[in-house]
Image (cartoon, rainbow, N blue to C red; front, top):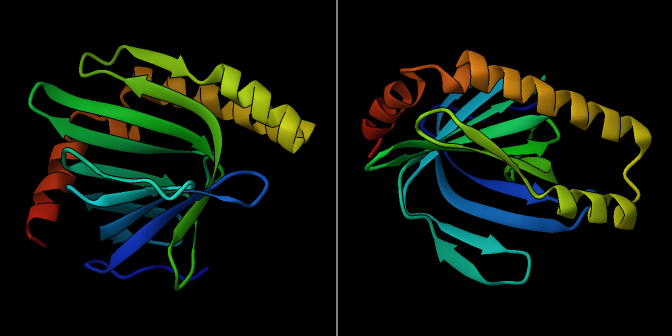
Length: 175
């Protein structure tokens, strides 16, 4: 798999299981990139939804993508602490166009005190039926929700105490 270069500005493309584009983030800076891991950052970037509507993010964000897990993590730096938004998704791929993944609806929101909430279970059930998620995918996704919860509770990887601050400092060197 091709990988972006550190310092590159890329887009992030989120798709749905049926292949339709879900969301596009523009102007995202690559902070680290290997075959297995990509860490990127952005701040006040345009996000375009599948229906053409767009909006601008409100705060700096550090995004963690790994090729061996079925989720990605966005750490948003707000005045009262770091909030995390975790997308249950396929592992990422990267091509000349963008970093890409399939969004599988389930999300976990993590608050600065590390309490969390599983979101969009109804959306997952609906899309699972409409798009025919295979049983194998369903099992992988449920296993990865449990792995993600374990990471949150153990403050592992992107949830470790200094992770977001360290990568945000690196991001500031590119601005």
